[in-house]
Image (cartoon, rainbow, N blue to C red; front, top):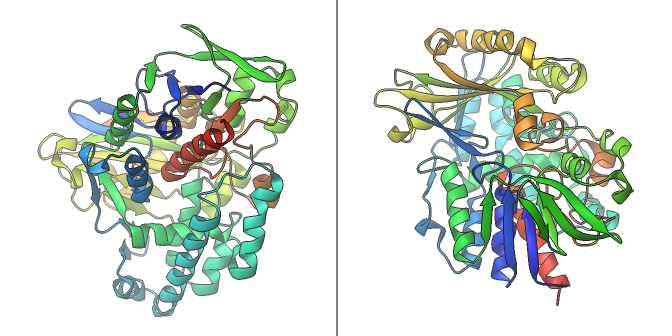
Length: 492
């Protein structure tokens, strides 16, 4: 097979795949539908306020450092990742505040202000989280499973050595904690992979160690600068990136990729990697006869991940009580996830996340002002909720929550933009507006997760949150690298 590759989509997975293939001697062209690279991550500048629409948190910085190192480059020569301390702030309805840090004793002290019993159990919990992260790093995150056995043997094997993995995240947390504040604070890590803590595997608890021990980073100039750095590296390695090119069809001949059709003409290649939602992209770009293992009826059977309602606000005062990352938790986080995944309606009492990047970087907002990215988790798109009709009313719900913390009236009236799950689906082709592809709920959902290699079309691959190793910036970046590595090994 020719060492030529076409990549559809210039998000984190597409760019990491392009870089890895270029390192290995491939001639790579990346086609991006939007005017700029980035996928779900786009830069928004309004009236001097700068925002990142999309991921605002960077964890597992070593993933990006290793990618640049493989190309013989130093990430620091392209972009500055700045560690945040504290990593994030959690604010609860009883007035308690916890700043996440890597200092176990300080974490115990903070938790102990509302639950001495939970504080006593925190060291055991973080040790367990570290054990899970080590196991996942060695056996799951850096391997590309291409069969059901390869998908599940590492997880089956893990339960023999880490018995807690058979529990849900909430089940794991309840082994250590009792207070609703602690359960909500660590249970919310399920949302980082688009899932519910009551259904996702306890393996998700590894993300606590990832943040506490490895750190959380901001990017000088905004998270989008990381996309710019990866794009620059790719182009230095000879990758051709074309934006404003929408792919309309993947042409298949004799069950092999032949070419792709776009709004700018046809591109021939025996190798195509799609960086995007494998479900919605397959349905859009492949005729159903060309994907017998993924027919429309199977696509509709997958449970999409949760989504988000986002508002961008430019506030003409500095709100230093808001750290770079602040979460205001609801009174009942179990009810919140029940609303999202069972009732399939936006929570009536939502938790609210705010990214105030002007707290860490003055250039993100005009002098003396604050740029606020305000997000609440919502269900994926369904007939049960019309965002066009209900969006304004739900904004009132969000600000009612913030008003209880003394912030709603300060921010209301300063909104600059609003994005709903419908906007996410339209702009990024995400499956039913899900932020992270599909959920990680249960054995069968994971077993049926679309593979990185098409079972039906030779030469067609996928890299992104719907496939292995899952959603989230570092995991999607690893997805692109893993796919590129396997392709390079299989083509002599």
